[in-house]
Image (cartoon, rainbow, N blue to C red):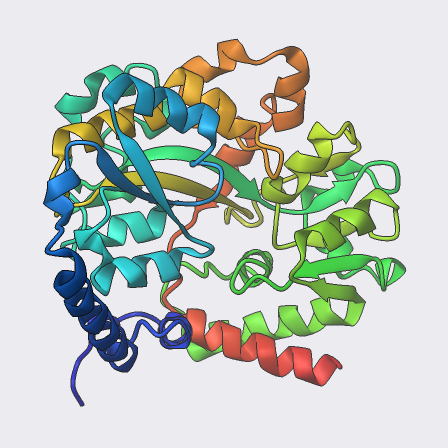
Length: 393
């Protein structure tokens, strides 16, 4: 069988890539159409290459929010640039698109850290010299200063961490007490039947349940460990009221009190409603269980593409994205509010904004959480999830 560029990925991600038409067959179709369009364009207008406008044009692949005009407009004005955006809705899709050829057209990428790090061995992202970013790291929390192991590939720095948060139970303190959630036990309490929400977000609801079962999902799992994951998911589904992919639906259930807790989201879910004034909604992290940390830390990072034809501008843009002023905007978007890696941003927050972001809680969450990365057995765990979900119905 011919090896493809994505064949070493878990099947879960391979299927996503194929569904987006970024597999080999899909790319062949795209290249043909693109080539035909290009030929027509040349005949009509003459050749026009990216280099012709390289002095001002840049392309930034990122999550929505990083493209906020309050962040980008000042950079454009100061540097005479015009930044276009390739917005991503999931990190595997963004990675696949870059690997499929978009890396030749993109200058900067902001995505989930495991996929940024993966851009190193894939030959997509530029290796960064931490000394060139000494001014940036001087303002960072110590936890994200180099050498920051999750962003290293063969000892080389691949990107700069930008924004982060934690995954654990989301609760409404009007109907349940935070101290009750020092473990995931309430998820399985018969008294809470039909009061638990689970996010239908791929591996995110599975990983914390594996941790609760005493299984570290970030290590290679044998069949016995996978069976423990099966048991804990089966028990969770018995108490689950609803499984949703829509963040707003989960938020509504927490706000009206019909749900005691939600599994598989964390601070990403709670922050926006806290910004709306609902401080009774909290994102928590359970205490370690038998020495195994029960929360999960997610981090977003930003990398410069190796094929950029304007590396100096790309470096300037990266530094701008992680700057103090940009960080304040990025951390308090309307859609979601999450802390950033730049410590200097803290001094810009009002007490109200610190409360929204649970700044007083964030290092407790950090200290009691695993660092998220691609789980080796994600395919098997997702298959178990589907089997147990079908059986529960």
